[in-house]
Length: 130
View (tube, rainbow, N blue to C red):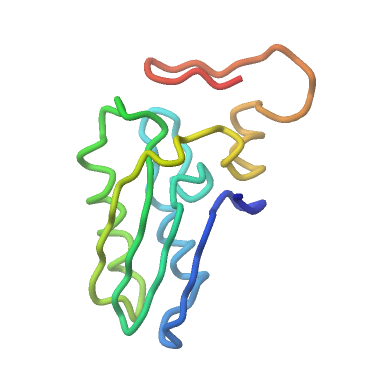
């Protein structure tokens, strides 16, 4: 399950790579429709760095996301900015499917998805969050 930050599984075994640098760069990649970064959205399921090689498994908020082709490229470009990462392999998956509960507390608050017992919802062309 995701942690309070929204991510699932960051395993940085490479001593030359700082986990905070990875988070910083992933936070620079935003879902253009929701305007929240992919890290806080919980779209990164797995990130492993061994000997400068980064393997990342991610998802999208919807299989019909209009930037489905670009998002893995943006993620790769961001991770290549991290000192110590020389190669990035981004793999897409829809298992498990994205769920708003994967988001960080900040992202949930931003989209008004907290436990406030209101019937508020955030709706875009492709998503409906309750």
